[in-house]
Amino acid sequence: MSAFRVGLLGHGTVGGAFEQLLGERASAVAQLTGRTPELVGVLTRSRGDFDEILERSELIVELIGGVDPAHDYVRRALEAGRHVVTANKQLLSRHGEELWSLARERGVLLGFEAAVAGVIPVVRVLRESLAGAHVERIHGIVNGTTNFILTEMTRSGCDYADALAQAQRLGFAEADPSDDVGGADAAAKMAILARLAFGVPVHIDDVRCEGITAITSDDIAYAREFGLSLKLIGTAERLAEGISVRVHPAFLYGGHPLASVGGAFNAVTVESESITEITMSGPGAGGSQTASAVLGDVVAAIGGAQTLAAALDPLPVVEDEVSAYYLHMEVDDRPGVLAQVAQLLGDAGASIKSVVQQGVGGRAQLTMVTHPLERSRLAVALLAIEALENVRAAPRAISVINEEFV
Ligand SMILES: NC(=O)c1ccc[n+]([C@@H]2O[C@H](COP(=O)([O-])OP(=O)(O)OC[C@H]3O[C@@H](n4cnc5c(N)ncnc54)[C@H](OP(=O)(O)O)[C@@H]3O)[C@@H](O)[C@H]2O)c1
Image 1 (cartoon, rainbow, N blue to C red):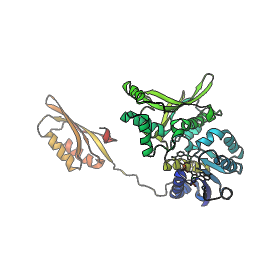
Image 2: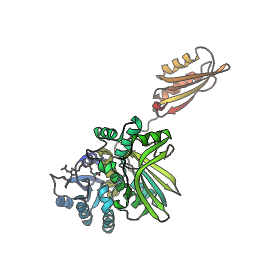
Image 3: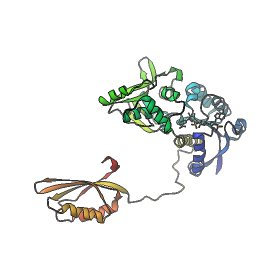
């Protein structure tokens, strides 16, 4: 199987995670595409030479960030006919038009899934799945730092400065958080999303932008009192006179798909008459998550992703699985029925998390939730329970996906 030669620019949080992921997934990618991706050079401030790496590579992964020197490297790679994959929203929101048209001219791929909303495949969805849809509006929580801060202010009632300090302690905010809290990071991502959705050039300077630094705990308390959520929302929408792209804090009513997106998560809602509305959510950042989006673009560039290859390590399809269960039983309201049922469940290895018994005349309804157990063991217990004299009908069992919510 021939090698697919990849040059890597930048070896920080994402670059390091990408090298590791590439090592782990190279065989699987080869299985899928027919070519084995192989790192042929790494450039940082202290190692590697760009021209040498370019010469040896078929695809350049740019994970340096910022505009200079990333702009020069990406442009030169495209001019040389190399595919490029980048996670750099600052670069694309300023020089995207030049780079996309260069990629078109040279017939190469410029992949940027990782530049917007981390691992959420929103770029691919807009570019491919919704390519024929007439997108009316996009709303996004596209900055994890600010969403973490606002979530923390809501959860604990603390003020902005304390929530920011907490975000910095936990690694959700950088030492200099101004790009995040001032809205510039979200503005860059919204510029790229708007470009994708509406097909017109949008520069980051076209995006009206207001951050969260002026938000007070009073604003949060107001939101809570009226059942609203306060979020930093990016909007790109089609209006009668053109398009509007903006980032600002906004109150969302409780039922809005973005209202419950908490912590450092991101989410994007796309509205179009033909699809009504779809929402995608997931981790907005993180080295391994972002690296996974980068690898997806690399696989697309190799070009074999359309096939359905068999896995390298085929897994059997298992017939049994473990789950918690809600059980409902119609029983005679006699002493000892619950004990009999509990005994049979216990014999099958099921322990009961909660139980409610309600009597109606001589009958009773026994409702309970079990801790997780194998479905086959539950089936044995249910047959035995059904055979009990005081049980009036076959018990009903429904899986509980997350018992914490019960
Ligand atoms: N971190 C995330 O969770 C995340 C999420 C989504 C997107 N992104 C994007 O991914 C990209 C990389 O982010 P990151 O967090 O991995 O950054 P990072 O940890 O700061 O790493 C940057 C890397 O680029 C290298 N570099 C910086 N200036 C350079 C120069 N002039 N010449 C050559 N190499 C240079 C650095 O070299 P040294 O090793 O020598 O310092 C370092 O290896 C950025 O565009 C960022 O916006 C990051």
